Amino acid sequence: MADTPPLVIAITGASGAIYGVRLLEVLLAAGREVHLSVSPSGQAVIQEELGRRVGLERFDVAELLGSPAPRAGHLHYHHYKNLMAPIASGSFLTSGMVICPCSGSTLAAVAHAMGENLIHRAAEVHLKERRKLVVVPRETPLSLPQLKNMQAIHEAGAVVLPASPGFYARAETVADLVDFVVARICDQLGVANALIPRWGTEA
Image (cartoon, rainbow, N blue to C red; front, top):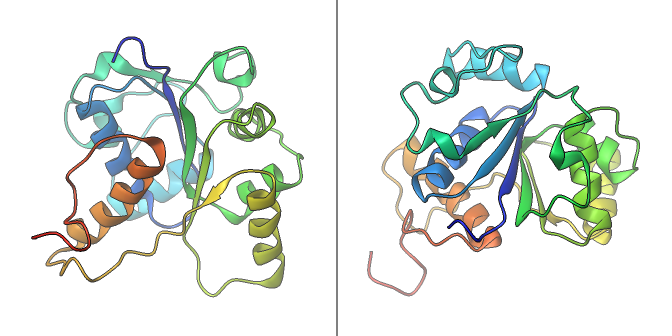
């Protein structure tokens, strides 16, 4: 995959940290080069939901994934305050970006071009360069401002992909439900996967 531009992954402070972590696992296992940034709220949710302490100042991918990462050499970590990171510039080519999970505040900042950190800036770059941007909100119920922000970011060119797993694949575990959402994200990125049975095919 050396000739394929890298992907950008951001984990922010919405519930559902497992979706972002699993997505990172799948992309690294597929041999994709990934640029990762984690917000402080994302760090807090990872610790609360997964029991994993992730250092933002001294990042160790094994702490995030809970084990040594497959092909960890393909991962580049950027501190959320580092606006000099390559992903802050449109001249740095990528294959797309995913914010997973995407908090309401992150959604609002990007939808209204009011970014104040690297995650916001990288997302704004993907919109202005007309590259794939996928946002994965996980909140219910949704307020009117949140719905309007989703409409705004959709109209700007992003894909709004709520973390809403389907049940037709007859999931048996929580991991199956997580993989359903991760598979749909990978589909948007053009990353081949066999995480779920496809509708109309044999399970």
